[in-house]
Length: 210
Image (cartoon, rainbow, N blue to C red; front, side):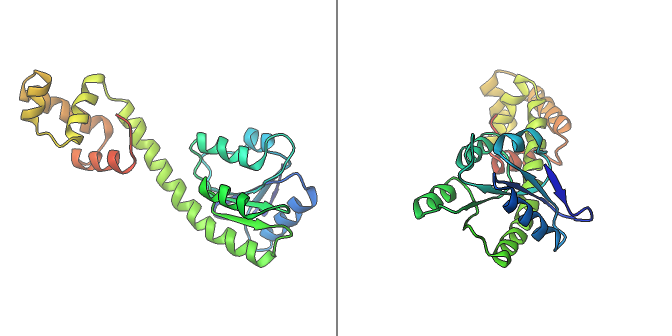
């Protein structure tokens, strides 16, 4: 792995390609405009070295020894990694590009790439990466706070999400309204939510499983 641009700011660009010369030329291209780039000769090296919490954009070759670009994309989807992925290929076709885009890639560029086009795509996706990673971090925080709840508190929260008031929740659970209100207060305190309404909005927005 190598880096380019020590004074760079913003999301890093991960270049995963078995072509050494292409990796270096891309790194130099990004360095020329102050974008930090890290390079990897294959998917396995990237998976062993990348920081999943660091905002990033990926440039991935489709055909590589071992794990292909498409297989790497599937693994990253399984890991819920939010980085925008840009595919590059010297052997691309419409079917390839459609497959990549349907699985969430943001672009599919042909080799040899056009430097200005590559810069424009990466600069645009760097802004998108900042948004994605911020939202991902918030979703993770909400999920972790929800996971801190007891089984009974989760029961209460599910019913709150369903729109039930304390009186109906108490009937459903066979307990007193006062006990339900205690659970509601504990849920709010343990999750650090401004209100239960705000927590419900986050749970629904981020599709948190309860």
